[in-house]
Image 1 (cartoon, helix red, strand yellow):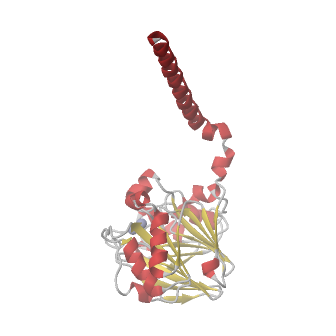
Image 2 (cartoon, protein in one colour):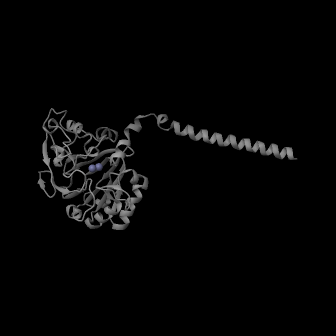
Image 3 (cartoon, helix red, strand yellow):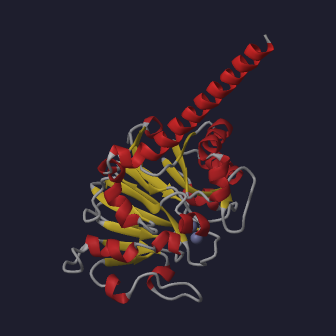
Length: 313
Ligand SMILES: [Zn+2]
Ligand SMILES: [Zn+2]
């Protein structure tokens, strides 16, 4: 099984600015099937950028009706259904994804619902399929129908909190997770309404004790605080190996010992397609110019010094 992060950003401002990418993540070869989770803006393009095929999806999961979670959902549904010409796959998510609920949703049109199975997930509801089972996990967030999950396939349990504030019962929903993926928008104890900060995640990871924890969905302040250091803080406080997601991160899961999973950086195919000069030339120029300026300055002062010393003689 592989987990691919097509974005590690979250929240409105990270999304608008693309300070971190917002394409969600993929679970590939999970019980033999591929799932795209929370395909936010850029999910389609990021798939190509990091070399995962958007037409090879068996399921799409949308946790709630905020754009950073559903922005590219419809186009990915089209990829999954060969441009809506085939019946294929399953769309899973909160009630608001499929039906308008108060101010939220629907996130996808009736047309896009029509060629795939639909599963409206609610907390504690368990749905079993031949390849996998999924349980809804509760959230306390803007969209009242928002839902995280715990999925199980091949005796491996992967839990995803989605956007939620920390609350006491959260650990009950994610209990038993082998891999816990948390939406941790803020650093340290810098809490904000409806979201977890690092210290909340420490509490959750400490209680759930997964074999591997992964933090993602970083907001501006978290990015400035350095998510890698925040993940180290979680590891130190809980004894659980914790990774901070980055754009294009691949976790090659060791299904027997998830804590021993390999973390890799996927090749950025867009950068590779650009000529080396396009990517680096400006930087080099700036640097060499600076160096030349320094050299010239040195020359000038040296000359002046020698002039002075000469004249003083
Ligand atoms: Zn979000
Ligand atoms: Zn949200």
